[in-house]
Amino acid sequence: MTTAQSLLSPFRIGDLTLKNRVVLAPLTRARAGVERIPNELMREYYSQRAGAGLLISEATVISEQAIGWQQSPGIYTAAQVDGWKKITEAVHAKGAPIFLQLWHMGRSSHSAFRADRSLPVAPSAIKLNGEYIHTPIGKQPYETPRALETAEIPLIVEDYRRAAQRAKEAGFDGVEIHGANGYLIDQFLQSRTNQRTDRYGGSIEKRFQFLREVTEAVLTVWPSHRVGLRLSPNGNFNDMGSPDFRETFLHAARELNAINLGYLHVVDGLGFGFHQLGEPMTLAEFRAVFKGPLMGNCGYTQQSAEAAITAGHADLIAFGRPFISNPDLAERFAKGWPLAAPADMSVWYSFDPKGYADFPRYQTP
Image (cartoon, rainbow, N blue to C red; front, side, top):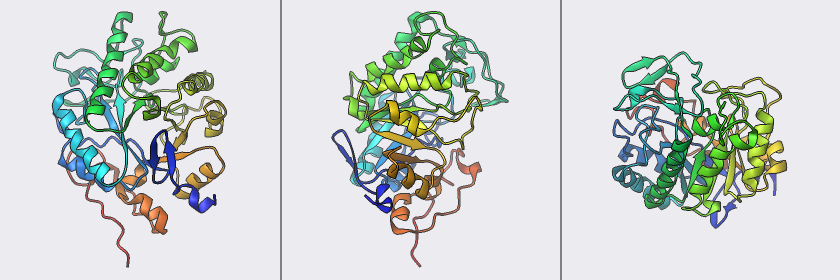
């Protein structure tokens, strides 16, 4: 295989054949409305980007408790399932598979998101050190979350299982468990945010327990090759980063390797922030302990993606920001067409059509 062919060559995940190794990264875009029901605008957006070998949906909340972002989609009601069905059908009509990313925000939330004004939940009552959070009642300071009781945790695991089942009903080809970026699963994994003394905290093995139980629950719905998992070992987003990050994430990767997941999605790039607690972890480190398909993400160009795949460090590369203003990104890569200018960040989460599905395909001179 030559370098020029690597990124654009087919790849198999279990019984799924991807037409190329370009993946649409999960991108929160906040267009689902206050009811969090996927809509026609979202159908158009995903359909436009179905030139990717695999699409991963934006992070999708598994329950009302999981909410912490304005107008992000959900997968906990029948109406949301019906909305997603129109999107999966449109993507499949373009010949691409799509996975749903399962999301619980944990402490990265606020009581204003819930009708009963209940506090966000977390493994431990450790407040996120951030300036503010955008809520339905405007910018608010972060709150100290409520530490989950041991008996409550299986209820959240069940929420993940139900969400995985609803994803199947909505026509998705699989699911990605969101274990990255300082959300609930990441909060359980990392010593910075998990100071529990029960079976879910203390040692690295115990901090991994919540992710283990979530994964096992999802695997009662989907075969292992239809389940992916996302981790962000280098990130400081949402006030994350732990002194023992390398040991923590290598342990997680070893444990996940035994499950035969469809893929492990690692945010290895540093463009989303770096915690500066040691040398950044690399895909090569994960490749040494995880033998299944490995996906890199964050800051990749076509050239660096080709290099990672050719070197054997990655099998797939997920692209985020380039896909916002280049809906035909994979085709631009294949044809050598230039990329459009990056989208203005002010439109990323604007709640309206502008800056969402209105980016044009490349027009040949």
